[in-house]
Image (cartoon, rainbow, N blue to C red; front, side, top):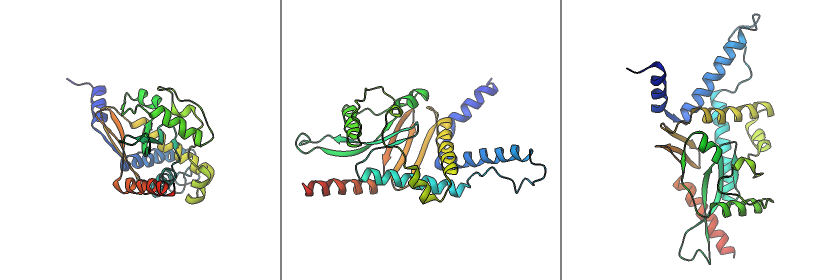
Length: 236
């Protein structure tokens, strides 16, 4: 006979965590927060009182802008660090003439601390540490990366909050709160026995299946990225 606790675990393990789930959970959390806060404002109706939370539409727009930022960075061959989750970097793609003309490819590195906390497996690349070091050097940081080091401990270029604020029209406080909410919910809901499928518009999908975390870049983005490689080669 199953207990209530085991039923909750099974329920969570069967949950499909998608982009729609992400924003629904954030919206629900904000609604609960507003209800609790409204009880402290007897002179204001519940419908008129809010804590300044963003609507689901605004959150989705911010997520789209964030994805576009990563998209632009990678096309410029620049890495980008996401809060606590991991980093988008460039690595050498194996090829017959890679020693002479190394080919770069985009790759998502799941943060070691995040992976351990959620008992997730990752695809490992033998040349990843050196690739990350080169990416950091290109951005003014020459720190060597050890195999099990948390990406968050490095001063890699992270999100451009000023640009996100200007493009979204949000205040600094609204932006920082929304970003923190998004990644906090991802951190809370990730389950190694569940299924995760988060869409990054114009970029691809972050997936977790059977405990393996991967990022699948869309075919359209891969073609765009290859074009930047060809342009760089022609300029040489």
